Image 1 (cartoon, helix red, strand yellow):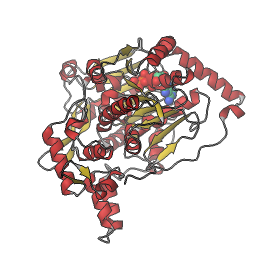
Image 2 (spheres, helix red, strand yellow; image 1 turned 90 degrees about the vertical axis):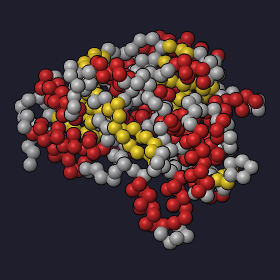
Image 3 (spheres, rainbow, N blue to C red; image 1 turned 45 degrees about the vertical axis):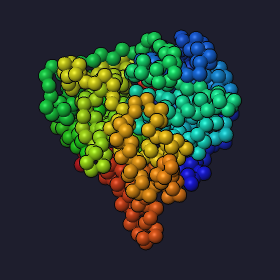
Image 4 (spheres, rainbow, N blue to C red; image 1 turned 90 degrees about the horizontal axis):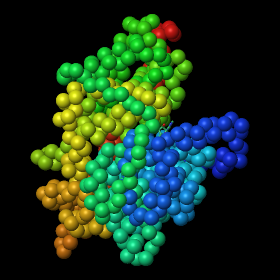
Length: 519
Ligand SMILES: Nc1ncnc2c1ncn2[C@@H]1O[C@H](COP(=O)(O)OP(=O)(O)OP(=O)(O)O)[C@@H](O)[C@H]1O
């Protein structure tokens, strides 16, 4: 059976409400935040937008990056009572976005995180009885839906950054749509669905969501100037590093730089390279603070990049696409976009997913550009030519069309959906890949294929593991084979990109390479 408990630990939420001890400082800060909110392009549309969303079952919202969709719309709906006392769930494709955005919205609403505003990501739940705006990863909402397919705790579900088309988001689209329809049929409280992005194929989304109206938000907060490389760059890492140091020489401190790379190893070697070069550049430009950012980095180190840069220095963040959507990193003035990403691709011969470096889509390029210009105007340097950009795909190919589907099929069966082939996918995977996934689950003993496809007791246990079905089965049978400890280590190693990272204590003396002594 799927476990009754969500697979994460509940963090203790401080019972004091920040209003009760609002200091003068807190008051001034909140006043400043309210001023910042008012300056967002979305603010002028607040009343109209709230009224429109109130009257619709489903809405597609499209607006420039940084216009205020993620942080403001849930607050507008809460303030206007559109949530009717229930919870507003806002999904994010990545945990770092769910955490940092919820922190920001809690600050803006003048409450402690975990009270009115909270978040739920794998292994961490910072919510309480009073939480009404809940930021969560799409994976968490999907897991919750296996316990409650009607999603009764929520009156509004906001599917943010819908253009990313992760496997979880795509399955959620169908699950949320079904919950909305089933609630209507059963005469339960209606479920409102809001789909948001800056860069999505609006017609495709609107058609899928029963011709839902598209609400366009006008305006962008700050301009971002885009520069293209004049020639094709064969070594994008070196080109990015050269661009960084040109910027570094010419611009004052506290104008920070975000560089997009593909993965942990490349990021670590780029970080080392930047630190080494910077040692020879004493006197040219302010001290550099170089930080990696990738999914395998421990959560507290990921969040460190969001800290304010020490006065008089420059922060350089070298990140994967986890910094691509939703996040606002304080101080970022320049983005260097290498135009590549590591994407999951399915190899039908081996039955395994592999990671391959591929070109990003135009939608991703726009999101990356959008990470500059969130607090003031910015600049984006694209390490590819304009002609190359023109050849990029308009939108990212949905992950569901590129990956092994056994987890998806397992999840759908746990939701009671046995007619997998006719599931309401926005973009249907091929029948062959769906059937291939069913065969794989059958050979693992997770499903029976008699009258209809059904989960076996083993399959039901496998659902509660956030793992590839082959790995969850391995864990489940390890105890009887007296090798649980060893298998747990092996499966843990197989479930992360890499377990190696350089602890901060070992690198911190490099951070201020200039103006301080490096031994
Ligand atoms: N953590 C933060 N710190 C400082 N400012 C922030 C933070 N989060 C948001 N902001 C401000 O709020 C603005 C709106 O952010 P928000 O995430 O709501 O925009 P968005 O329209 O959802 O953009 P995107 O599509 O890029 O996610 C940002 O441009 C920034 O000025």
